Length: 129
Image 1: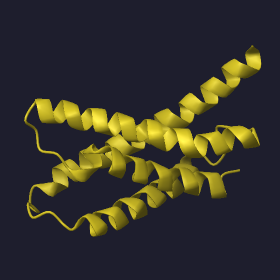
Image 2: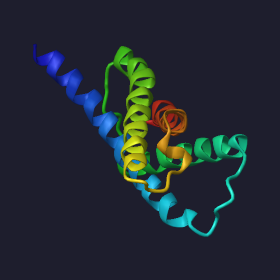
Image 3: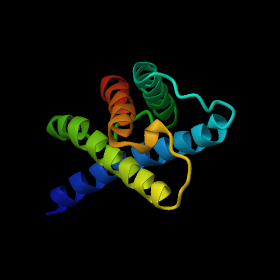
């Protein structure tokens, strides 16, 4: 029972870290997007969010160098589940913004939120201690 609680807590820590970093990036991008009303191509946005996610992963390792999940099987599950959860949270945030007639950016959609979180998770997976 204690092991299950520990695994659940570690997974939750990873998800919360991803969502907080993604939300901060989203907030920053919202404030920077006003001057650039013309939308870039989806391929360029895909590349940009992948790079931003990898950079966020590197920065998160600077702050939290140790992986939250110690078990190898847990780290593999985290590689799949955390980006799915973060993408779902960003899609929910986008739906919330849409209901309030607020401007949306691509990060407010599941696919881009997932991609950002996947890049961040891959960097943490590969380089975390």
